[in-house]
Image (cartoon, rainbow, N blue to C red; front, side):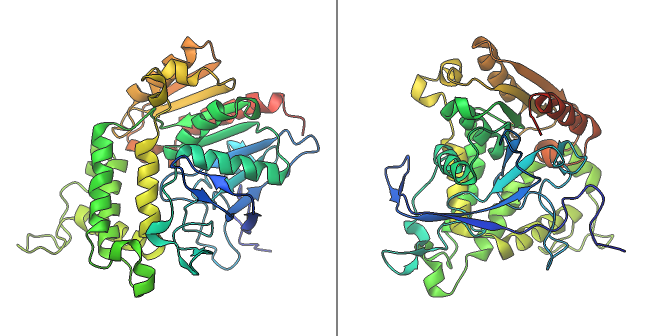
Length: 382
């Protein structure tokens, strides 16, 4: 019988919602009195509750990490190639948790949610959040699920920042941290890309100061441009050349401002698709989450001092063509961890894909993660 479930998939999954009535005080000074976090789990939490893994999402992803939905089989989790039975993070051995972070737009409390004080959507009144805030609320979710300590916290890009912050904020609650395509803070260039994206949204006439819900409008034009700008940074020049080169859509130049090159058509498609499901206010806040992340800031720029509380074992992976979060930036993290005599494994993968490589199939990358989880599994009683 055909079940519709692909080999190695966790199969059909169902999102769940955790409700929290205790206020959370955010780093910006604001508080959210009550909130909800949407999450998914894969695999089984063992009797000793020692096999839990937290998979942290990057900018445009959410709680749907693996598997698919019964009513939408094409909606496959963003890290489905990494997590599942027999995959690098084997759900026959590990219990994996994915969560849509506070301020998100996929069910967790965020700008689209109703502000109980006004009876209207939060909109631009929703506070700015940080990686530290996300980790604090994830810790509450772990408490809710009865997980005292994660076998591993892992993520790529912004997800890796969360894994690093977990190791610093809750050193006794993380046995291993996997930092993939990470950076200890954003460069000026990266902040600049984020600001261009934000300005595209904020200057859209349909933005209405962030209260566009009340106007029954959406700043889709600005969000499309923001996504196009961001997407350029996720791919390497070689990957763009390989995929698109200077290919013309119609085989000849038409001397117009409509898409003529395949890369133009691709970027417009990505922007249009993104604008259909993502919320602009959330996008603004998540880009600020990226900008603000800087563990060394409160330690006079001393990253080693900032990471001193960490007690976890670390796997740090970078990709040679990732020009957004270059291998050099990952090596800064490795150096700071080694300064503190932490257990660190570092790998630099020669992959052509750019920053998005952490999401893609690369046999060397996946073998490395699988081997590291075999190491973790030795100490996990399942």
